[in-house]
Length: 297
Image (cartoon, rainbow, N blue to C red; front, side, top):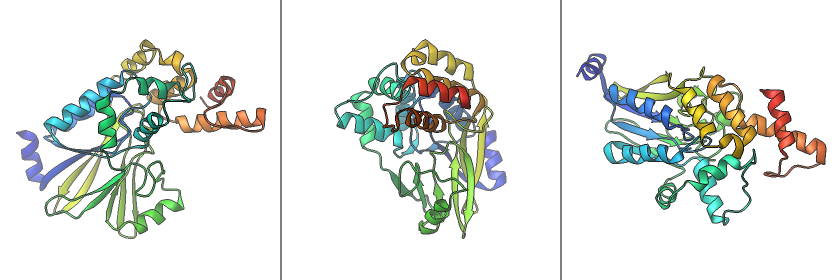
């Protein structure tokens, strides 16, 4: 086909689609997968956080399982998968409905099946991948050392981790920001977030790795999709009631991509501590959430 002929002309022998941080955005996921398939790509790497803030999580898992059956797919675990597994291990205690701190977590958790838990339990935190005639790469969600670590370019710890990494190429997600960091002959790549990316102008993001002359060449992809349908479904399924302020942050993030949940959560906890003298997650009053949302959004 035309896509295959174009690859041959460019000297491309293999393509790998890298997707991370879907967070339950099955509409964006469908768009990214469709794009990749149109490019003739049939090998996919998923870097974790399959579910999270958005409506109808079963729709995302249905796509994941279909991909697993039909194509060559590699999967690792994200911190969200740890949340679901740890919550089950703790007996399902501590999360509440109509609560901006844990309402979204509880909504997603309540939709999980035995098949989902078995899938999450099977996932490694990191893995080494090697393709024919190519050097090995390390893939993880946060960092190779910690599942929820942010590999931002302005953190000295990021460069220390890269230096300790034995492979020349490291793929990581979690930050929701597309990025390339080069240090001492090694490269760390982040494909951004499929579901709720930061600084993307409301577009879904992932990455394609092209094999060219026995090296990987990254291509960062940003795609428009039906954001308003995703936001409509947030309200349709009741997440605006189950997790009021968290849902507001999600909606803002989907449209504008500039303020993440962690920033608003951190401010809400600061306000809680100012009022009470202490703040223990997940016991954060809604009025603190409301004030944090008003300040930041």
